[in-house]
Image 1 (cartoon, rainbow over the protein chains, first blue to last red):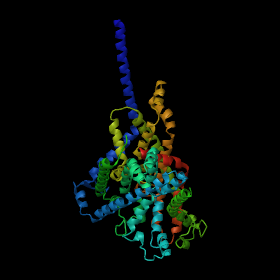
Image 2 (image 1 turned 45 degrees about the vertical axis):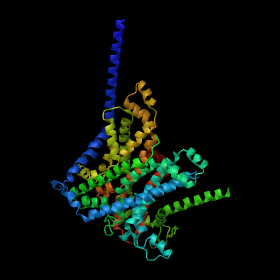
Image 3 (image 1 turned 90 degrees about the horizontal axis):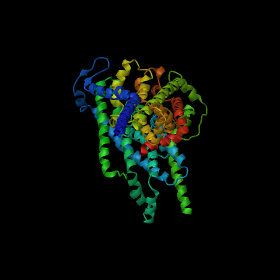
Image 4 (image 1 turned 120 degrees about the vertical axis):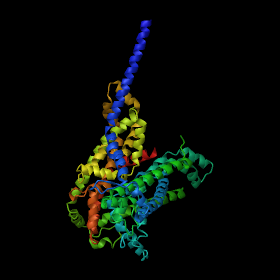
Length: 313
Length: 277
């Protein structure tokens, strides 16, 4: 009897030992699988971030060793008119183009969602510009479309408008052409909206129809609240994305951010500072400002989401 | 009944018109590429006036080296990035989705945070590192980060996908004596095909379209990628030679367009599943 009991406890002990051995094995395997990612985190992401924070406190031109300045780079930004202007340009771009782009995405998604025949085809047509929009080729096209003698002005001339601006060459309208380009790429958020709209239970619409709710009421009272998590996701994503816009402004302005710095995005000024003038310290400080801005916007978005995003689970 | 039909028809009409307006610039670029120079800007129509391929012939050699060189360079960069992302992201995703280890939550949180990290924050030190290694004007700075799973977006996509695969499959394999590597390689990888295809497609298109990092690391014309070559063509283009420039722009978009046509299903699934969650 006692021998049997002893055997049992022994077996139990053995089993728990085997288990912990298995757990250890699993952990070892996990870290092995994570080796590339961990190496990337240290060598490509976290390490360079720490280095970048240090470089941002220095004067560094790649050739001489960095000279420590403290917070001078950051203080200098407050007096840098071009930098403050580039911040303004970037904010204007984000605040105008993201809402317009998302409104277009949601509007078209709602239209396409209602049992539309040929949905897959339309979806592809609308999505194509998002895939191409970030390319140099499309930026080249834009520069030509909105040139003084470009297609847009030819079209306007046909309509009798002969005093149209030179768009990309006019400080008042240059940024607007880039906004149009970003709105044109509404296909990516649209596809996400479409996926979200499909999740809204049809029974809700049926019940509302029985109650005599009209089209607009159904959209405002059912569709919108049900897809708030999707709207939130798109807002966060597109804001982060828009803050980092670069290629379009670079190509359309020939790398200058002109005319009169009207399309000098923050990222473009950062590129010129770091890789044009080799002021790596100042460029790094700018990068940290960009990170803080993007992080702040994301944090504000998450905080504000408590008041308007509804999760049903 | 008839009002319903009318409604449907008008809806289709609106959707088609907007679609036409959106694709018009692309179509216009396409026909402009085969137009004779003076006709490009006098005709907003889509009928190719000069229907020869002179612009392509001229454009092909006008960026210093034959344009095929840049296409090959971009292809090599994209190939390296694809292999890197497939291997490293799927390994990390397997660990995050299936294995228990200390620090899992913290690391997973860090991984999610890196998705929104602007590249500008790390580009200066990265440039210093890669230039010390003598890697400026090689493709390594564009490929090595992918080998190290820095495209966290794809790690996240694959984690989400693996979570949808029944755990019982892994457990059954374990009972049959399979180790973690065998489970990863022989059970999960084959089942992850849709996620792997999505990763391949997006890595290809994003690498092909990438400009910022390629502009920074590739300064020797022999190493130019397609987008950097196109940019140098813009800079050297006089006002009168837009035809060749458009021709090469079209050439540079063809691979993206082909991948889009082949992979539509996966592209839509890819954005919808990562976005919907």
